[in-house]
Length: 222
Image (cartoon, rainbow, N blue to C red; front, side):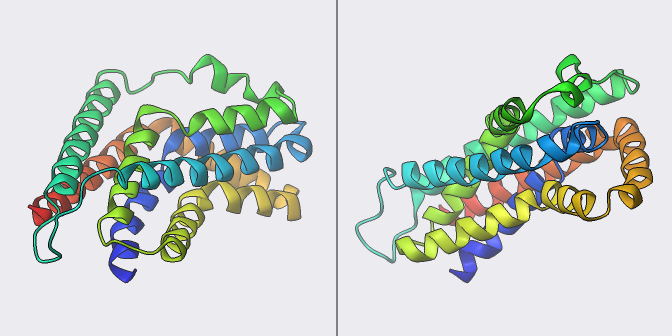
């Protein structure tokens, strides 16, 4: 199980620093409806993340295992290499877009998220889990959990750790803002300004690094 935890931690970290859910969280927390919408948003983000990585882990069980424990997990390795390459390609695309348009405005849905209600906030956070990057990271996590051949209980523990780490950058601001909203206001404003300037490049670099790590993990299975 420790091997699986070691594999999923960097992937969960990449999920945690993803700029879109963090920015959406900040926009919600800065809105007049923050007290009503922040917890539903957090709930949807956590449930969606846990459900998605659970599905990818279960789906990974369909990948054939070697007949002997001494033989490498070739199918798992190939799948990890494919996912890793896809992550690297996605990171390069994000990097090029950020360099070409460093002052790109926020998407319309993100600019208006501060006006949504609780149910809409829940739905948006659930939907954020099925973005291409989030899907690729969840698949990588599912393959990493599948590779060591864990029991159901051990897999559940690893999935829980993945979810806690991945959701931490949304959960911590939400909980802190609910506890001390006035003290969080200037911090949220400062973080928002920084993310607008730098988030795409930072996230792209992190995703590229994770892609390389996943490729390396796949090569080790061959």
